[in-house]
Amino acid sequence: MNENRLEGIIDMHIHSAPDIRQRKLNDLQIMEAAVRRGVRAVVIKSHHVPTADRAALVNLVKREKYGEQPEFTMYGGIALNRFVGGINPWAVETALKLGGKVVWMPTNTAENHCRKEGRGDYVACTENGRPVKELKSVFELIKEYDAVLATGHISPEECFMIAEGARNAGVKKIVITHPEFHIVGMNLEDQIRIVKDYGVMLERVYAQPIGGGNYKKNLADNAEAVRAIGSEHIIVSTDGGQMQNPEWFHTIEEYIDYLYDAGITKQEIDQMTKTNPASMLGIGPL
Image (cartoon, rainbow, N blue to C red; front, top):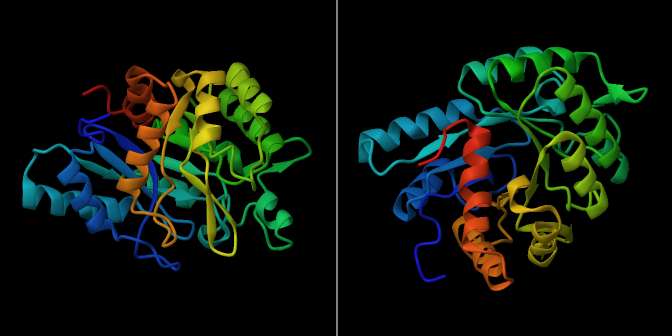
């Protein structure tokens, strides 16, 4: 693909500085890189703190420097880890009132993540086969603010429980966060089933950690998932920001090129990089 591959795309999963962990770029550097490339929007994510207030400041800087054109918006959200009180409806409401668009179930302090790494002091999302009672209020808030529920690092079994509980509560936008990530470990058959049963989006990302600071690219598996599931239920994101990986804009370029060379059509790529994430963020078509 010889054209500007990033014109109008949306990346719903970027880790940025400031953070406890060293990151490739800070919020302002991400904005500058996005504006130069015609990126429509990004969502910045932290495992430790809400990010909607940071995104609002970046958008103010962008408007003061560039005006309303080129169009670009940064969004934030909140991950329900131990650092914000776990399944904390008060924290969720505050984040959404500040403009947050995504509420992630626990990530690095999820029960599933902690058990697989031999750690304790985790945040439980389910109990006796159903969502914990605190999630009732969280689901109501996500529905009220038309936000996105993302599943974080919970297990495949929990993803099904959370999807069912959220749908029953009226949540319209559900994203299964990097189901291919080995901590989540959702096989392709379950990905197909959860899409069929609950109409969710699958967020398939560029790479995943494999230990020792090394990352393995997910591109071949992602192309297989697109063929098996269909582009209408997949969001292409980078999950970028790690020092070991290229800058997020290089990873999304490589990702798009790989899919195209693997026989995925431009229309399908546009759906996964533009239409589907725009629908999740409630910003409509360009």
